[in-house]
Length: 511
Image (cartoon, rainbow, N blue to C red; front, top):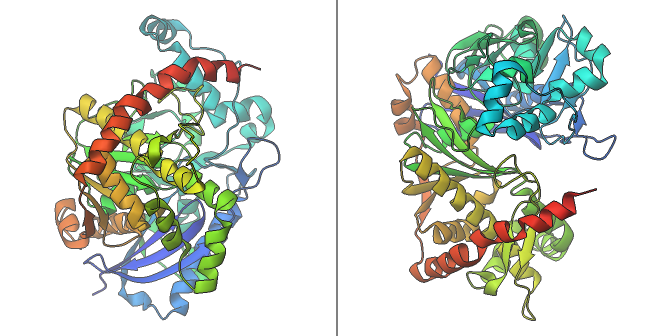
């Protein structure tokens, strides 16, 4: 009887097709690189939806080329990058390029909320937050600047919904994939009630939205057309998973609220899983977890590990060249850069707000590095980047613990940055907590496979799935003296930086 699980993971830079067994072992992997987006004007980030679909097809075909036995696969699940949006017609054909999650377009001058909701937000002091959300909503931009596209739109889908349609022929999507500026009730994990304020803030006809399917439920079956181009067996069940951050949390084994899951990816995050709905930041909801009815409390550092990529591109050509010549991974040499500098980077402190968030820390924030001296080298800058990200995530962890009443006592680290041993040790030292890595790098794909495993009964529930399919590869214990130094800089410098620089950021923002 087939028991293996196939997870399709459509990330920002690649699409992976991954086959796991019921014990969470990665048996096969097929990876297809994709161009994340193209830009026709400053701040815009778009992509042809066919790029994503063709990569899914190619990744699946890559499995069969490796000799994967199709009859061994019991189910398939799908996880994707969040908040990438696609307008399609009645046949599911895209009407325009997808608006990528990295897109920065805004719609100024959107009519503010009126009536009781408008009055309530004005009294509570939340009008500016709502206005920000309205300006960020892609639907408002489309209605204002491309009304002909909006009027022709049959369904307004996230990438997950678009790929679901391509696989099973239904305009449906998982509850766990609803992360973005849409009229979604994150507490009830369903579309907003008809009287809710989000329909006024983001006026989308409910008929344009897909049917929602609970996590770990069957969305549909692979169609003959999808089978022909992907090679997936016709009739194979597609099980609802969740967005990639949520499945990464599950794949890292973080089902208990005392375990913080750090994701060192393009966006750096700290997540904890809770059964109770808690807004760590007012009006910013917790997202659906990869477990039905649970919530993923999240603090984001937008473009977090993007800064590491930026450093490598701008200042790391030497290490990349040496690594290629020596036949080793560049990360090994970048780890040497980190170790060449003591904890605290000899007073160089970085604030990692290259792209600010809504209210954490604030929309006017910018990145900053202070503490340069005559001993500062690029190694200091590289270490300060890693330390700054860890400081920001520690601050997020403290906010989460304060709001939830659940202290975080251990860490799991996933994403590309988790492959650096120096970054892992640094993280443990900054937090003063043990930091562990999952046994597989593909944690988001594993989480999606776990949703499939529970959905078809390979495991009876998520506790059993976590026990069977997740485990720790290695753990980094904090160094006491390093943690003491980090505490000095965290409280004495880092936590003072934003409030002292905020007025300068506001001047910089003025046109």
